[in-house]
Image (tube, rainbow, N blue to C red; front, side):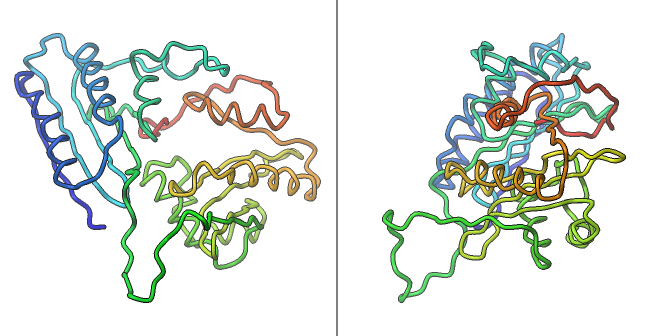
Length: 299
């Protein structure tokens, strides 16, 4: 499908209704269902007004709506007063936190939610939702059989092979755009080199020769331990148990390579990764603190 982008710049709270009118018009024009994006956007705007602007009439916001690759991307950049995100970077793993309002409410409503502090460029929030009634561009043919529900998607999992690198980088981009914090995985050449030198041990999930999932072991320097990381599944293949199957394969690979332990840094707003790690027999062992570049995106 072709991308469709609309940009709004707002400098007065009296114009805020244009945000929701634009979203509604874009949904009607595109013919796609935006799910709970309306509720998520309303929650985000209310939070920005509450925390970033003392005078609600003197706002400074830029919103970009983009439909591409069967996803709706909504980017809000605002230039209000600084805001401390630290209170929103952890929650109880058992899911007992109250999600009736705030950032966790937004996190529950959309498929991906990122925010970052950009210094003099203000703050940026990215909301992404998968379009449930969308299909990627295909060239129709008269001979092509109609899709049926009686043929579910089958997936196989194997270790990395030369030639997988470009598909892996595109899969990362498909899920994260250019917001993923490990730039190595946007460079096919570096992915191949890292797997060849065993700096990374990638495994992939395939459906009819198409890579739809990726998981990796990252050996920890100067130890006999490895991190489980870079876990991603193509949005159209989520809910099929692919992540669980890749996790089992990663554990088997770790044993084969002789690592004495594996660990995951499922930190900040990653409650689902935390739950997955616990289900595989891991346990909470440490609190990791550190400094990161200000352009790091946190999901």
